[in-house]
Image (cartoon, rainbow, N blue to C red; front, side):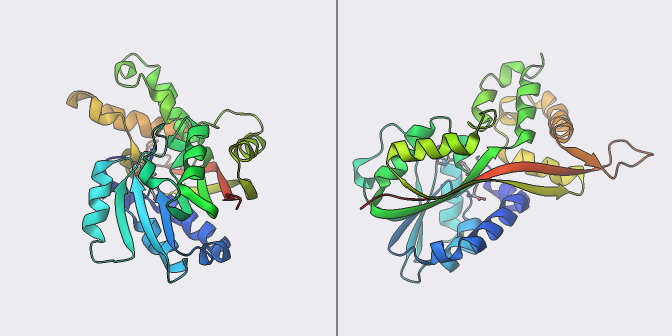
Length: 276
Ligand SMILES: C[S@@+](CC[C@H](N)C(=O)[O-])C[C@H]1O[C@@H](n2cnc3c(N)ncnc32)[C@H](O)[C@@H]1O
């Protein structure tokens, strides 16, 4: 995700879920003190609005992201806040910097880990980043049916050359049986104590197609690879295909392109602890 300016205008669904889940796990977050790390922070608004205010007042937090543009946006926007810092970090790296090992008391992450495919590497890295006794609260998509739209578009002749890696953008657990059980087993294999691991249904209503379009395009990785003359068509096809994977209602009888979309998806919520 390289468009933080677009993302902050379109991330209402993510903000709603962060508000909801950070409220439910308020006690867990309040116990987080010392040096905290947030993974895949994007522009930083979720950390600033929902996590930082609930952390122990002594805590500081390092916001991290794989995207240079996003890290720069966060640094520029929150320059004045001494409790927050922004750094570049790929949580899927097989070469975690030695300087980072054991450096964090707690780790949070919202709406990021479903962008990763090597989940063992991700959890190994989180384990290694934490101090013994450190805890982590992680929220990420188990199954987001709208993202199957990428697979459909990648199979069409005109978009195929620009979407050869579409599978990378489908959440790892999207088509896995027994999603919660599989994840919990992996967390234990890595060495974590699992305090909580749930897979829960969530929903969001996009009143207008324009809202859905902005939401999808803010995180889209394909459009910038396409020639200019294909981009408008791709935008329209993407939104139509995403809507087709969801529930369409309030359709306008005089214009079939005006309707609302109910998006139903499933999130993992994980609270884990590295043993002492
Ligand atoms: C949908 S945004 C979520 C931003 C924010 N946490 C929120 O809840 O609004 C996902 C972020 O994860 C980042 N990301 C994707 N893969 C990553 C990786 N391997 N390591 C770190 N960050 C990653 C993206 O660059 C993007 O900024």
